[in-house]
Image 1: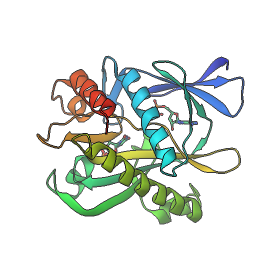
Image 2: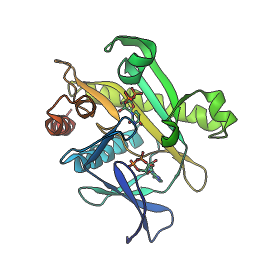
Image 3: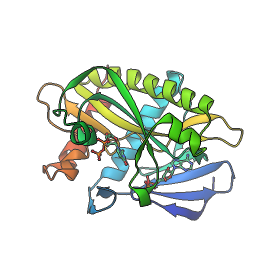
Length: 237
Ligand code: ADP
Ligand code: UDP
């Protein structure tokens, strides 16, 4: 597999073409951003951790019946993935109130929901990823109703699998963001990443935040939290 030209540099990853038009290489960076790019920094070792964690969890999800873009880990920071056309929706599942939910609705952080919630944001940095509903997504032709229903059912399946996985390791899955895409034949697969950048993960015993909120909220111990969560991932069942 040959790594060809860089197609895109995002906030957390670079994307490269390969000699196969159906495959891409993603390269995870240590760069960290928050608040739609307003806060910038570096989290040493983050790229390698996010790469490994995302690949590990996507492999687990494939076994749970959720198709993903993952093909092969190439190095510490690089992974071969199936090229998709990203569905411009950020799919957010929440088990416990945190982040924008607490601000938007005035609900105390840590409030446990009776059942998980789902919401969509329109993936558009210029607009600040505004919250939208299914009718808005359909009106803007972001996806078909069949695609949205499939995405929702995959997202809840991801939540069930990851919640159980982390619970065994003493970690509470608070919320997370997923992105889905279409393969060239239209098949919907889970894409992008699943990492402490895109999930809220709290130590179940102490409530300690083991995710990007340490960076967002200047809580300190950011690198330590990323390596702590990576150690938990490596724990056996
Ligand atoms: P951002 O674009 O938000 O700054 P990243 O730095 O993570 O985010 O950049 C990675 C980009 O690659 C994102 O725009 C993401 O939607 C896109 N992407 C993720 N997986 C795939 C894939 N399998 N095929 C095509 N694009 C992908
Ligand atoms: N999230 C993400 N990328 C985004 C927005 C949110 O990965 O552009 C993740 C975030 O890490 C959290 C979940 O989605 O795990 C819910 O985020 P929220 O809506 O509370 O937004 P935030 O507080 O991060 O602004």
